[in-house]
Image 1 (spheres, helix red, strand yellow):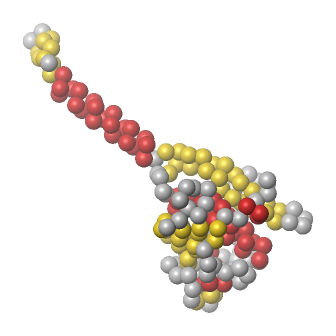
Image 2: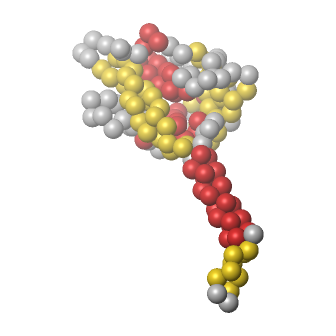
Image 3: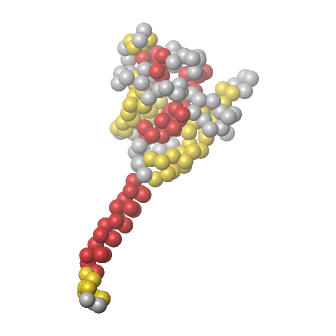
Length: 183
């Protein structure tokens, strides 16, 4: 369809196609990086007990971008009554989902940084299940396996990977632990 505007002709097709393309690109970008509310699990303590508490946070991520979610977990809680479970200098190398199991590969600082989070049986359990409980809220993730520097066992900087922090060990797949969450 051509519309005459004085001496100039306006071709609707030349205007409509770029507009439609621009709108389509805008919607694709908007849908690909959605902000969603996620539950991150951080440590809580009383004089006689340790537990996890959920902190709701809006996180901008694409579908299946579980690495971004764990990076938010590592940043620590925003609520001052909660405590981080993983040292802040830990890097998440990957989160790979296969058959209901998410394999989380972390940097060596998860083993070697004793300053921020002293390694104990309580802190180890909180660290492991903060990762597991954060990820298992997502459909398709039933279990979590943790590796360090791509390995599930062996020695790294004088520490045995499979011992993690020396109490529980990471040589198994972990399922969600509702009992450690304080309601």
